[in-house]
Image 1 (cartoon, rainbow, N blue to C red):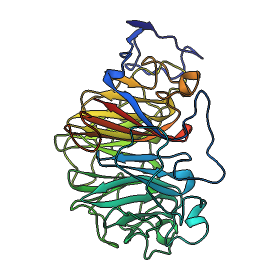
Image 2 (image 1 turned 60 degrees about the horizontal axis):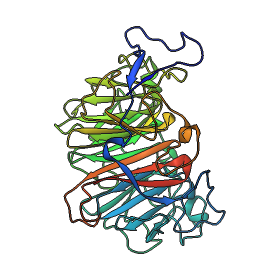
Image 3 (image 1 turned 60 degrees about the vertical axis):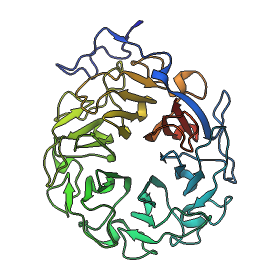
Amino acid sequence: MRVQVIATGSTHHGVVPGFGVPDTVESPPATYDGWQPRAILGAESPGGLLLPPAMPTAAHLYAPRAAWTDGQRVVAADTGNHRVLVWDGVPDTDGVPAAVLLGQLDEHSEGPAAGGAGPENGMHLPTGVLVHDGRLVVADAWHHRVLVWDTVPTRTGTPPDHVLGQPDHSSVQPNAGGEADATALYWPFGIAVVDGRFHVADTGNRRVLVWREGIPDPGQPADLVLGQPDARSREENRGADVAADSFRWPHAFAATGSGGLLVADAGNHRLLRWDRHPDEDRPADAVLGQPGFDLGTEFPYVSQAGRLRFPYGVTSVDGELAVADTANNRILLFDTTYAVGDDLPHAVLGQPTLAANGENRWEKVDADTLCWPYGLHWHRSGTGDRAGAGAAELMVVADSGNNRVVVWERP
């Protein structure tokens, strides 16, 4: 099936030589390439947006910005409620409450720093989560730090074992109250372990920090500062025009599957790719979502086929790629991590065509619609794990504007 692409607004707005969109593009398969919603965690929103209750519960989320799964559990950054939720197992029905809540003292508390109790056991807008080698790691963005639990907690309110980016568990100032350096953080929005290397999207400092040996000890300087000329610089795009070695808002990471790195540079509306993990600050090898390294332009009034608008999330598995194209309210699926420029995905979740970008398809909230998806994680496994018999693939999507996390599956 082919669909006509009609650009709205000015006929010349956002046109870039050599980066045109064809008059027609292939629409994605109606089956979303086999993906389908399995369970909704948070607001069920039948037909319309359901706002979270004034007093939260373990079954509600408010503007979640990240989600992660290994087929054994689901972890979500419940950003608006300043907490992290952990589900034991992967739910297969809607509305299942989380088993453990972190960052608040109980399921009904809300507000930054454990509702005012203090940052020692609280969070302020957490935006990234992962579990690596049995350790839970959380990007506590507006406390300008990363929290580490040596084991995944089984009790609500368990405080973290370690704090990265601050001198102690009580400090919460940007860059630890001083200038940027290789240990300090300013709005660390995204975290990932890629091929054994621990990465932090130090978004407020417009850079990426990398520790080559994995999750570091507190106070350990990063081995690599990527995106700035030195550890003290923090200007957007290095204080110059957008380029192959600069960031505006770095936010998330994925592996190429062959020893390289992908970084979602959301503010420049692009993904940058290094074909080999950089061991020094150097330009990226390729860009997706822009015609070249020298552009970071948003194109809101034209067909969104071949374009990205604020891509805050990226995940990969076995050389395949999924991008949370946040402002276009969709998930793009590529069969390779080596897509470049305006390459089209082979499927899109949340929209009827590759050109569409409406919030909840401009229709109504449904299980397969999206409104500002920020974070996602793709897990592929064999049969027989706790995801359920025959469930080979899972993708958890933090559907932030709909106040929920949606578990997608491809049996």
